[in-house]
Image: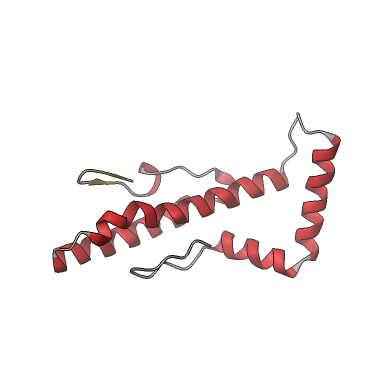
Length: 124
């Protein structure tokens, strides 16, 4: 998400499948992290947050990619699916319907993770 002094955010830096509808949320989080890093750099002269921008933003991007992948596999039928694949998909959907813990985990990932604090890590 960075090349030299060029910093990218949102769709310029990553594209997430539409199943998760996360593009705008990720763009906002990218801008949050980048603006915080730029303010820190211009306020202190330290580039530590700019140097960590890509890693921090990409943790959130990959969490969204994972959620989109999960929802795609859960909610769509694929022509090359076997009978086993179909039963596993049906079982996963039933598990999600019946498990408050599974619902909470999906809701946390889908609704969005909290922003990482400076110097912290939230991998979700």
